[in-house]
Image (cartoon, rainbow, N blue to C red; front, side, top):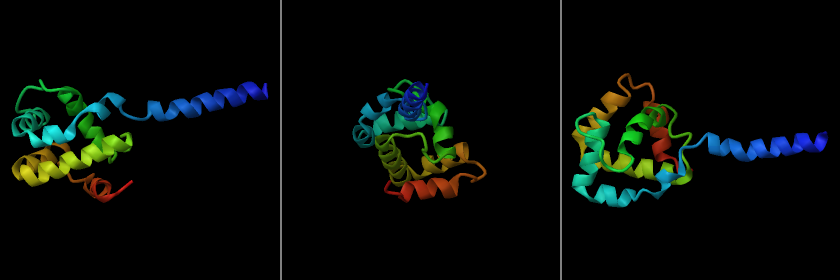
Length: 125
């Protein structure tokens, strides 16, 4: 009986990280390409701000996930996803400051996640 209990615990320990992280399909997204292509970057931004269709790869998913990513400072992100979120947010701040203001107003209107998310942004994991 003890061996079966150990097996169940081991299986759960292996499964938990998968359950509590975002799909690995997002790891395959070429964030550098998106950030480097103004029209593609704009398409994602317009989707996230509800100003345009969500027709580019995974954009509709991202619009659903962004509130949680901000609220929990990317806690469910894989290491690559954390890197990509940081790159994307920095690019948004630098390249599109007005849209960045709109993004903050939409996804954190009361500024309640600002401190934790700012700490995530400067962290190096």
